[in-house]
Amino acid sequence: MKTLVVIPAYNEQSTISGVIESIKHYQPGVDIVVINDGSIDNTSFAAKGAGALVIDLPQNLGIGGAVQTGYMYAKRHNYDIVIQIDGDGQHNPRDIPKLIKAIEMDEADLVIGSRFVKETDYPSSPMRQIGIAFFSKLVSFLCKKHYFDTTSGYRAINKKGIELFSQYYPKDYPEVETIVYASNRGMRIKEISVKMNKRQGGRSSITPQKSIYYMLKVTCVLLLQPF
Amino acid sequence: MMSPYTYSFLLSLLMLFLTLYFIKKRMLEFKYSILWIITSLFMIVFSTHKELTDLLAAMVHISYPPAFLFVTALVFILVLIFYLTLVISDVQKKMTKVIQEVEIIMSCSEKGEQK
Image 1: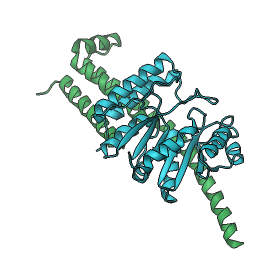
Image 2: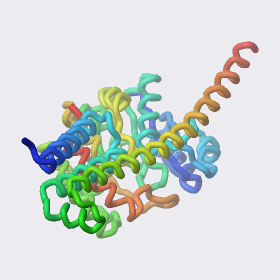
Image 3: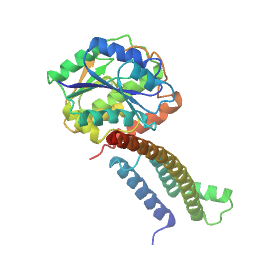
Image 4: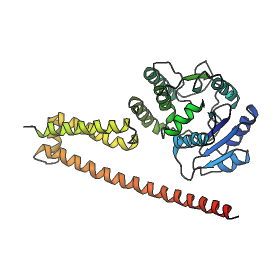
């Protein structure tokens, strides 16, 4: 199946080439596109140097806009599977074949690489853990199915999902909302245990100051899902 | 006859309902809706707690307390308009950049076609 790896990146010059090389190592021959979300460092240059196709957005659209650009690109070029992976080195490309296999075996339409399906040694702060537990409960309640890691941006999506997310993708903090959105539209979602690293460079998009806004916004949009 | 408080309460409730409806329709971004939600909630509290409105009105020497509600709403509208002009300015800046980029790409592809 024709597979595209989408890497949204904002100021990830120190990690992006390592991520690309690692993807090539674990899944040779796969197409890789980096959506450079208006970075002000050398992300674009580093990604091109590592051999990825780079789409340079002239403006910073935020994570949602960047990822959706990847889905639109995949739709336009008729890809069957999209792998979404962060450019900061948190997601280990070693798990890509596992994610692809789950889609190829038609086990689900959307596969989430989860930190918590099995006990992993992923380090996270207490505040972050509270947020993750809260959204896990809320999403599980809304979807009537248990989800462990709703904030993971490590995902594999089939053609149905590519079509859906090309049409609508939340602008900021999209991970949690997309699960409920996809589930409400009949997508089958499955979590697969993956090992994640601590971020190796760059900065988290969610600073402590933004976390309250994040909780409020995501809760509100989860409860107010579009028709 | 309807008291000004009931009237304000109903209007605030309508405003809150409309805001939530448009978020649900994804026609209104959450970040632009916060001001509306907060103001609606404030207006609901003021219009259902007459004594609070009376107290606040007395503090700013407004002798007719419902006028305090309307002045507050007016101030909110001014804040909102100011905020919107900030947003418009930002959008205009971004649009300029996008138009420039598109034109550069167009001229490059035209050059390619001529070759």
